[in-house]
Image 1 (tube, one colour):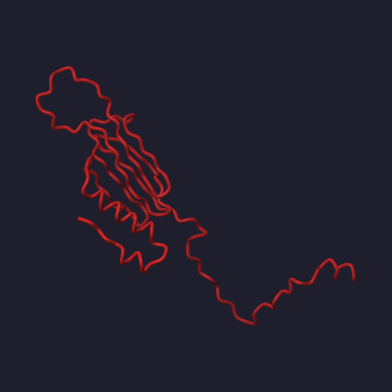
Image 2 (image 1 turned 180 degrees about the horizontal axis):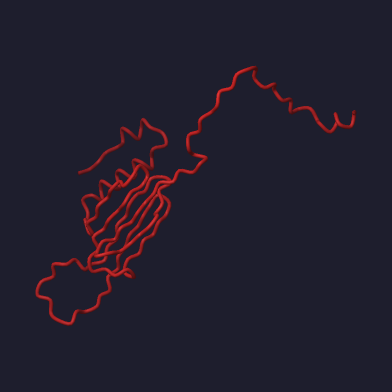
Length: 158
């Protein structure tokens, strides 16, 4: 399936990153789906990613958080088993899974337990970016300040 967002790109300004992300995810949806994962919203600004990484040790998994990107990679050691495998049903291959993160989403915690890698995310909007309520005052507006007057000249004249 080819996703064509050209008509929307022509009529919008500043959404290039969003369209690129949608097209990239549409292409990746047809690719390998290993390891399987769950994505859940815990609270208003809290999220959790759970990946099934059975057979991987903690030192075989790397989590890298960059701006707007979370990369989880597993590199399996190619150690030979003692016996001869008659059937291989447990996936034992290396992987790389990418998650696009919204602005101000940060990794809070990552834990590996019982073959599940749980990554907790939190969205922390800086105070400067949060909406502020402006108090409305009554009375005459403040007088305009004249910045063209040199205050040192006024102080010397006095």
